[in-house]
Length: 191
Figure (cartoon, rainbow, N blue to C red):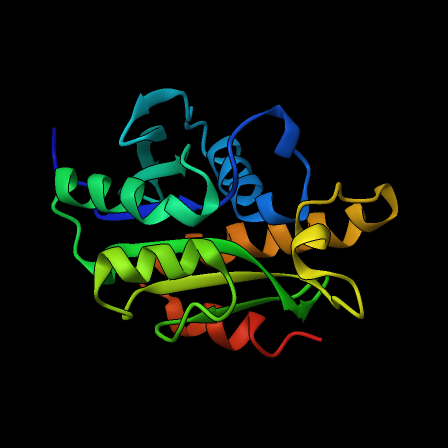
């Protein structure tokens, strides 16, 4: 089988207890991307669930780490090694309470901030130059950060979240097709 052009990762926590929590928004977005392109994410490999196929003619592997968030880097680095994916072929989707709900932001480098999944990935990768699609779940307000990200997403927040997930899927489609600048110009400035 030909090498994959991209590894697309949705950060989150495994198990029923974490479904539909704020911290699983990255995972939800990659699941939505798989549905859009008819890609099943069911094979157990790389300490996660994975599936592969084509998005706009480009070979991709979708990965949902089944480690807990703070160990995500181990799963991602295994998939990268197997497919010989370089950091510039990696797209990571994850939640960000510093962005307002309904917004996404695309970046090519930076720190992991307070996000444990990104910290784990950066520790394993030793390279901060890869594409991140941050999906807004904020504002946090005066809530405890850990309690907030692990709480269930309220029904009245779903329309804005679904819009952000739709935007994240569109952004990834543009990025794999070589239109990262278009994605950044469109979504980083969207109000």
